[in-house]
Image (tube, rainbow, N blue to C red; front, side, top):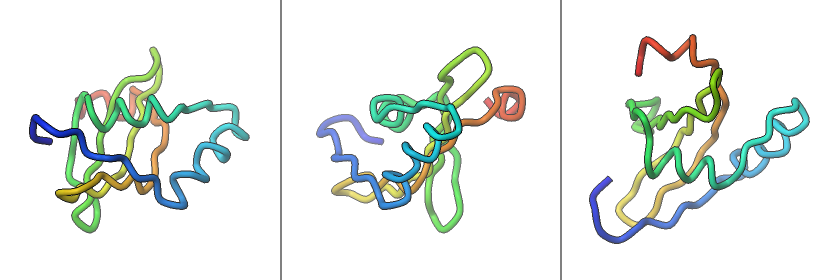
Length: 92
């Protein structure tokens, strides 16, 4: 992402529902964690259909992965999910 104006984050329907889904499974994720992952990722990779996947460590054992679409005006959060560091560790 270029320096300068900070793009607005928009949460798609699935991303908004994901907070509740993860909470039900005992994994609390905040909007701040999602925002920090997109704005200050440890790693970004190309995803499906031209999307990006940002990744950032959130605990000793987990990373947060955020799937998003980046346009000149905004960043749309498609979904996010926690992943075990040991699964993605070699990719950092």
